[in-house]
Length: 289
Image 1 (tube, helix red, strand yellow):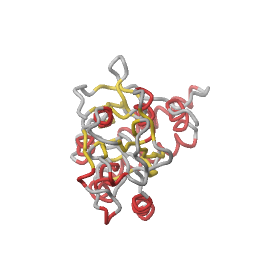
Image 2: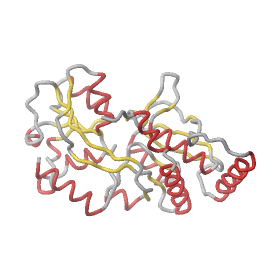
Image 3: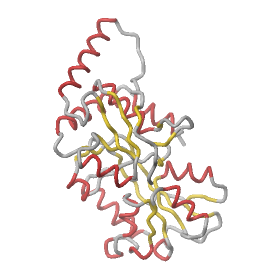
Image 4: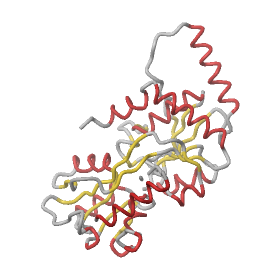
């Protein structure tokens, strides 16, 4: 395992990259824009802010004027999931809503397969992709990425009493969500720090991978820590190995030909980080340990 962690972390450190993450029949829906923490401000200031946002929106190039379309895979709690009423919720959804509000745009969430979500922004079918997306060398060739907004830790889920350890993963069958960095790293050749494709099975989403673990089809599942804890909590008999398999940084993916939107998103992220909005959204879904 030391070999795997060393290889993966070296890739992440050298590239200074940010790192992460099925198919849903849920149609694209409009999600309410999340506002920054409210403060009392004079009417004139509020009007000026609204005017500035409207001017920003008018200057931005988006797939649909006045809208910020976010492609995602809403099976990645607590970053994106479908609420009981059919709406979308989660860290990424609220952060995207806050960014949309800053830019004077209406957020529209389009749920699809993870790989399709990445492809949508490349093909100009969505403005941004957020689904616990990390940056890899290959992804940098086909899309731009914003500044990082959250840290992701990849964790190994096993059955309680399992003999799987961080050191013998290469001898086991591993389940991962297809298209994620967990799958990319784990399925790479042993020479590159992975375990080889013969030791990794790809699933449409994390839930399918976890079900395969419960059914005995795989020995463990590598997935980001936040959803891992959700899956363990919902499935008695599962636990996680101690320690991180790898740490990564999440970022927002955008089309390579839309530098103006990239700059605007980064500016909004900086402001939302400075005023505490980003951290408050993360804290709402992930309790401090």
